Image (cartoon, rainbow, N blue to C red; front, side):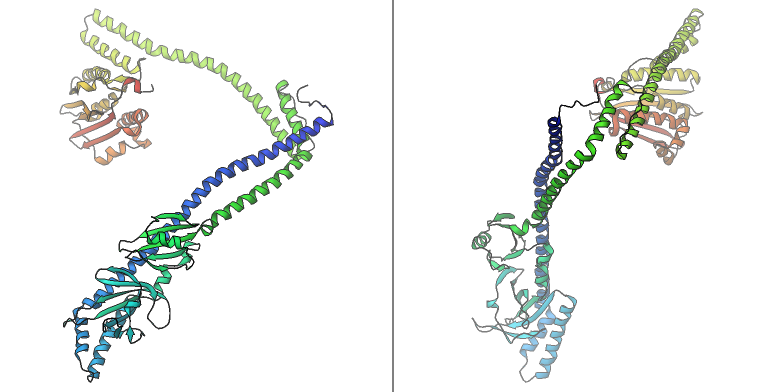
Length: 588
């Protein structure tokens, strides 16, 4: 009997449970494995690209800050080297005798005041000093300095960086200011003095600037920096344990913008100033986020396995029998839809069965509704046939009037009825919804003649179309609503004119234009008529435009253009631009 399991003994029952457990385990673990494999490949690629993009962006920001530091030094050294007033004070100082202590002190105080002012207004500058070169091979002597510096100074001991805009740049190297040991970039530029005496301005960045720029914390992982000078030599290596083959690849310019070498990711930025900044990330640091995510996935998989085992046990103990009872009720519904369900001793399954009973009741109600609707459908078909009789009856009646008019020699009535029959046949007939421009023009001409008779020939009209446009397919009844609006709203007492023009544009578009010489309207009203405002449809002009706009949207979507140009006491022009299509290109 359907709905009742057949008992083949305890072995069959245990096999069913075992199968249920296996299926449950597969149902829980197989999707997890598949999703895990697909997710791992996708997430690895996404995280890898995200980390690379983040490192590259941070490296570019650091390089931009270094470039700004060089530009800042360039501008500051030019100020102290090329300024005529400062150069004159330095020259005057050097020309004074040792005995003129007071004058020397005054000039020195003025020069130091300028140095302090520059350092105060530019927080990125540090030590500034004027140097006088000694004998060849000897150190320079310090004339003036804004900070504590020794009496002698040797630029030959500084690591070369670049030659940029007439100045020599060094570093990164420890600052010459006291014993701080912070890394700085420095610049040295020849000073222009009146007597052409050799003199140099030496300037360093702020002692904290390089440490702030090359900040490892900005990457979110351990990153070491390598700085290559303008001679393609390594000027600074942050990691002393960097393998030699990586150093050689950097110095030989063999890494490009990115390269993976010796378990390290190398990111390179080449500055337009002639130096390069390389970021080095060990693979273990690079993959730390990916490894953390993978551990989380493994933990989720193990948790899912434990959950699947526990769930299988709970299903065998508490769910299997009530579930079987629900299945029996479902199967029995085929035989007897009106029978009431029998409940179990589990509250949750009783709730399911209650819903199932509600569903049975709704199905019965739906079946009854379908039967009723089938009866109503037959009635609607009859009404539809009756509704089609009215146009047919109207055509027959008008044909009768037409023949009576001809028999009695009433040519005006004959002409009027003939035009009316043609207009009604085009508008209400069974012709396709898609017609050619030639069909639309013929119907429009009949409509215009009919309206001229109605208005006692008080207005004139013209129809002008390119021959190429006659075979273009357009929706039926496209122009008549616009022409009707032009007649009703666009013709005045002084002799109305309605002009319809159809042109081909750029071999791809059809331009349809309806123009009248009526009272017109302001531009705000014209734009309002093109909106979907329901209030606009209460006016006759709004109704016609609304119909045309909906029809154009239906067949052409965003490819159509509908515009109104109007001027009060001059007239109105309605323009439609649609793409050229053939009859078979439409879905109607």
